[in-house]
Image 1 (cartoon, rainbow, N blue to C red):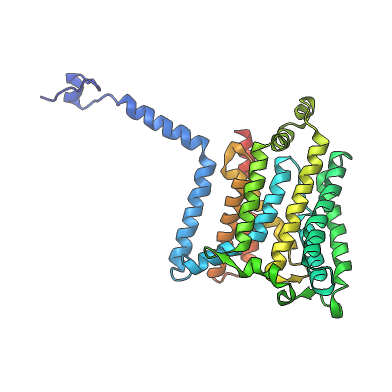
Image 2 (image 1 turned 180 degrees about the horizontal axis):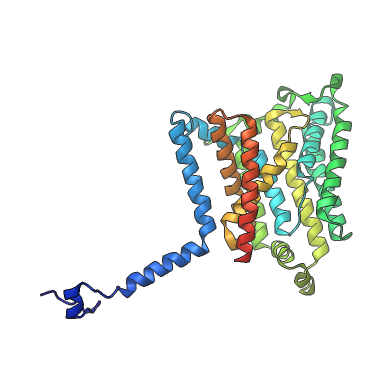
Length: 352
């Protein structure tokens, strides 16, 4: 005769007929798993597809994709995109957009290139005027128009981007012999070293990005300024009534985004020199990384750590397609699809 366990009581008739009562602990466990999956389905999709993508690329090109050399190449190609993505993340947390980021980066790149190679100002002055002054000035114009002028950020930043593109053409006309590019070999060695020098197998540009990401990410969550940015992005009217300096915070946030765009231009110049229209294509991937990261972290919304993972996801996807020798248009289409899906997932996350 079967023994009835005291922690799961079953009658003799149930034992004889096989009609057992379900274990309540099993029911509770299944209910918890279903509830967790329903609340975190975006994270499951994000990390699941990332793992699946790595598996597919590894099986398709086992001797080329998942190798130390390719991993180093993948990560070393990320700094410019990641820096721009961090920049747009700041204004996205604020609840705004900045479409001038790639144009600001391009202007910074040409200013650094011309001043450091064709004038006597020296590299330090070139970096200050290019990466810092250009970035902060563009951000200040954007922030003032949006914060104090209450102008739509979408239109204002598009206009500022156009202005930066025009000034870039003006500075570009100062390049010797009327060329539209500056070879990386002409760039001062101390700037080239950001790409030429390595630490733990990765370019110094990678570590620069990680340090800046840590600083910006910490500022966004640990400082009063960061809490103000989140408050404005959550509910601007409530933030204003609570005493948050909305206008000043908007100006400072756009200035930070402009500064990060200028630094992105500097990082690009260190490894590529300068050539026209090189940074414009980064706009879509930067926003795709931010939105895809936000979609994956659910209710937490936009954040620097989420954007870093979004940039890694997109870079891995692009690298894998390159390893498979897919044409460039495929990567462009896939990035557009990723951004489309990410926006929908992020929107669904806000409604849930």
